[in-house]
Image 1 (cartoon, rainbow, N blue to C red):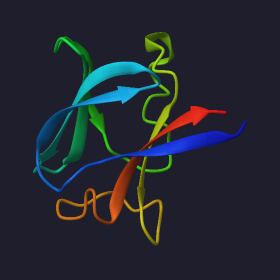
Image 2: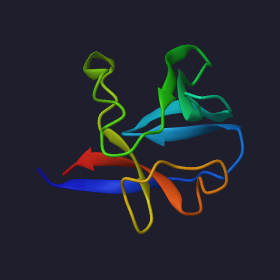
Image 3: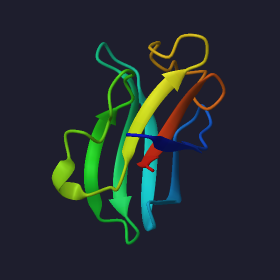
Length: 106
């Protein structure tokens, strides 16, 4: 199946923003957790700010939305790093060398 990918614009700092994915408006929040099991984590809320999915780690090599098929996001979400798509985003490179993409089946 072919996919069209759209980059979710991010910067290497904690942030919360509105975004439209597959025609639906959401709020997303990314935050860095500095601990042994840490890294960047994603929270997804509906447009009103009601939590849908919390604490999704930005790992590479998998569809981050695959565990939630019943939530019907209308696509897939992937984290990738320039040069080596399987390198996990670091504190300093999110949005510059590490990117998050939303893919819609075409």
